[in-house]
Amino acid sequence: MPQYNLQKTMLGSTLYFIESGVTVDSVTVSKTAKPDINPTTNWRNFGCVNDLTPYRVTEEDTPFKCFEGARYRQETTSVVLEDGWEFTLKNHAEPIYRLMLGLAAEVADDTPVIPYAKNVREIYGWLKFQATNVNKAQDIWTMDLWGKLEMIELPTYNDKSVFPRLRFTQNDSALNVIELDNVANV
Image (cartoon, rainbow, N blue to C red; front, side, top):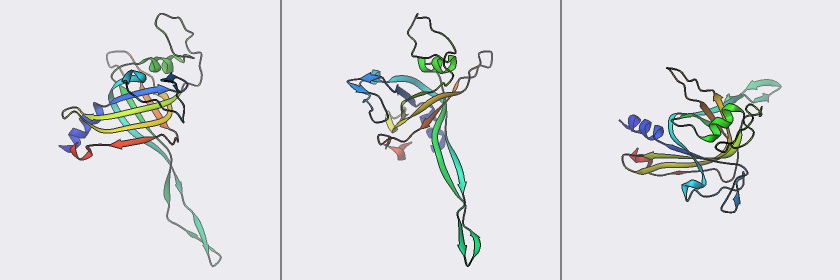
């Protein structure tokens, strides 16, 4: 039963994003500056999570030590090089179209733009991940991460539609934080 509850909590979570360079309440968003989320309209709401997978990139490290002139192998250790999340969403937000179509800047309604103008398709900013137990109206965790957002799988639109798959890669920032609440009540 706890695993089922955790699954519902994670898939019912909400993601918010605010990109680098945007100014909110006199704060220009960067690796060292993060605006608050009060009101929530300060950040772009990506909506409900459809599928969520944490990922990490590792490398094996096997140090060697010499003893009496001979090589001696030590225990192999996995070193984490990169952490992040891969996810699909139930809705499309503007940055998803920007990543999918290679648009150079944020799109305004009814304004023509040049598609596929940008070859490097990534957006730096803050991702706020709120895992909430909707049955109990309790936050389980809130996580703020600085990093880059990119699309790793394009959507397909047919009778078996596939949502676009996004990857958020965490980059180091002194403002990265996770706040755990009610973890035992998941």
